[in-house]
Length: 369
Image (cartoon, rainbow, N blue to C red):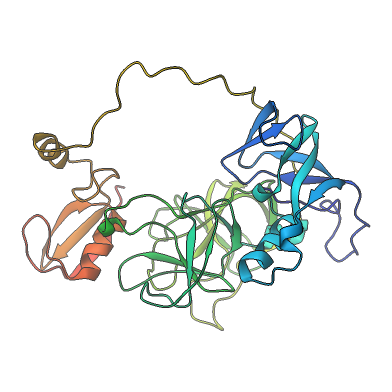
């Protein structure tokens, strides 16, 4: 998918934007984007681009999607906003050719800089529900590679991180207790560095990681500008995840976009003042034909293998995939047994500690100093 920036990226936002030109800068937001020799889906692949790469598109000669013209559903409305109602895009650079517009999204530089955008990465799409809990009404389903803006991130009663959009709530990950595992949606990478100015009188506290409990690196004084290269919500506090920004200078680390307080005391820490020009990345060569597998795929873990995996002190005892980074606290003791996602889900279901079977008082995420 792609995100287009206007040609006013280096101008102050107070100035009116210049009239659009044929060649726009777009940003790939799908995991892999194939640029082909023609509009046909089976035509020769010229190059492959990755999420976050930039390309130029000639909108005037691109192919419109007639199926969206008279469709008033929320899904169609988001698709028109995302790709301007186009079906196939005429690519100018880095390699002339064609690509699918269903992997694209469009917006001006200021809008893209301010927005918290996610892309659907789950093959089956993302369910949009009316409420925070999974028992709420299903509104519609966003397809894979759809882009949506997030207003808030919270953890629900089942221990699942949920993303609030203008149309409802979307799960960030599949429910591990359902037997499935993996992300539903992921944050879009920042296509070009963003420039923010510190506006809080007390300055911006730079911490080592995205979590507010990590070590303080430095404090950037009010009035200084910083370069932001990534955006991410914290995992804590669960009822109000904090929007965080990764800065590269003058100090490297993470800062908050707003104070972690209830409105109206959640003052802005920084404000957006500029967006850098996107850089066109060199394309990857066309993919080689798949080689025959040398050995059969590894079967799922069973029997003694599961016992061995559970005995591995670094892996979550529930999903057997992610690292153990959460502690089940009971009384004055605790057990480090699961990843944060599985631990929250087990606690929400009312389960006891999977190690000692004691009732769980609280689940915490631990960090090593």
